[in-house]
Image 1 (spheres, rainbow, N blue to C red):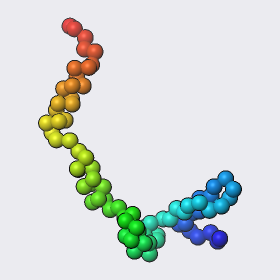
Image 2: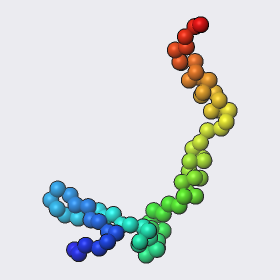
Image 3: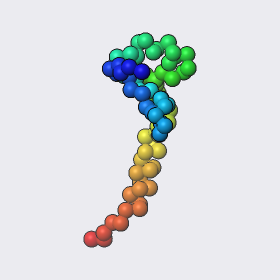
Image 4: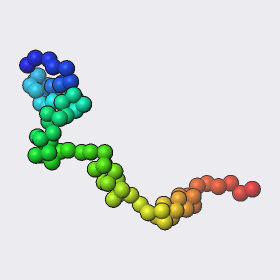
Length: 77
């Protein structure tokens, strides 16, 4: 296989191509249909929504901070 800028073949111990790393800035548009078809697309909005759903409320944050503060070895003065 010839070397192409932005494409790197990752090989196993025997030298066989096992996976490929592709620069999405260079080839993302060409790969978009394939990635959509297999459900492998991820946009920054997707990441945000996932993290938002997994996040905690402000009340839960305050509760966790208070719990953590109780575990600290405070010095009596």
